Length: 135
Ligand SMILES: [Zn+2]
Image (cartoon, rainbow, N blue to C red; front, side, top):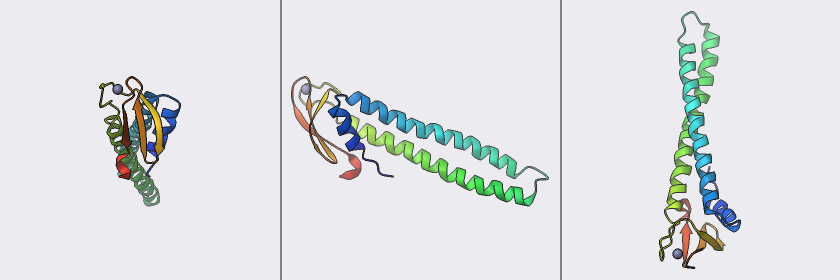
């Protein structure tokens, strides 16, 4: 599942916007959250169908198979939600200029994947943003 979040950051910074990258990360992580919530509803509906009185065994087994897929998908989605959210927050916490304190006004000066060398657009201070999963 590892995605090249630092690579995406570098691409967005080349186009001039840290906030665009952050917004994309939030949209992606929250789409996983919504997916996991929908799958949770599906799991509850499947449980109700499985325990419905008078249902045939073959139908119950089919529901159980679908239930297993839904549970695995829900776990994957909630894991992906936290994964993207935590990585985005970790990188966002490194987006404050160490000199003037401005947040998120970055200019890419070097892409050494998985590290991004950036400079503050206001004062020119330079530092490196490190993707936490690739230390
Ligand atoms: Zn600065």
